[in-house]
Length: 418
Image 1 (cartoon, rainbow, N blue to C red):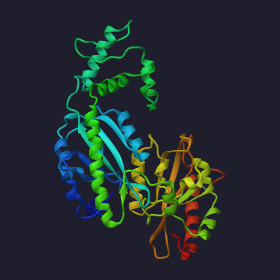
Image 2: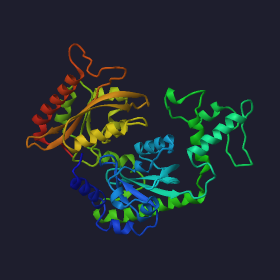
Image 3: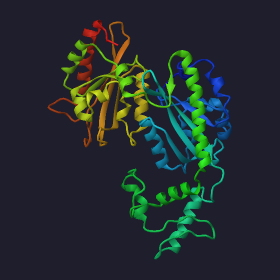
Image 4: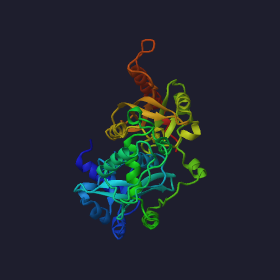
């Protein structure tokens, strides 16, 4: 874990580095409820929170900065909404969704949440996310799980042999037709324990509650306008440092020009190591991949051009455990090795269990020059230490790390080309 002073310093630098010392004062002028997060800090924390956001949630700034936004979730927050937001973050794209959140005092409120990425034009990658929150004040009566449970009970009692309809007398929202049709609208696999007769009562709860509190079109447009204003202010201040930001990723031609490379001799030497691994450069923005082995490309299904210059997070998916991701980030922050069994995804979308070992690779002076990540597909294996011809998984990975370190140490004198 970070020391308190180190964490606070990183939070302060998160906005100051890409922009200027006046950015917070400029952002404070807005009356919107919004936060800015940094995906490159451990657990993707909030680095700026507006006064409107603090008043809306009841938290003070010290209770918000440095925390992941998940603290707004509660017992009735729809899991599908959380997955949708997480997927938008993974794909580095915008999303707008209605979600049930909670204030500091435990009071629930419906929130029109609009998420938007902030890209750095220099490297074409996301450096922040803006999250605008708009409370939805007018909702129909179904706003808690208790209400929904009562209504579902009434529905079951009154519709044993007939389709359900809208009960005009008490404004209850029900579904006509069969339950199977409802399930077609949900693509998230919640596992067999959550499924029964094509759909569970939880499906009814989430659907009923969400329909009960839909945002107005004016709220949606106001959220978009808020994003535009904040983005405009960030862009204005970013120009002072010569590092412009944008709400869109730069084109492929720009990415090619900034794609990181290493010396040809180092590339040739690394290609002789016959295992799945990547080499990333922590000294470049976003810790991009600078070398990917042929075995890695075969394992993931990506081409080399699709991998070089990207952060390894593109292997994550909707069911990737963020605690595993945090462990990796924390080990990098501490410059220590780390081994996790993490769910990753191939290019075709198929998941696989990856026994990932990451380790720092130091130069002759002891400074971390690269990080190596060694992947091993352990899908279907109950024991990660299953041996292959006498060699355990751990031995394979440590052997690959050792080989990479020898190659880098022997050839780093030529220096990585930029």
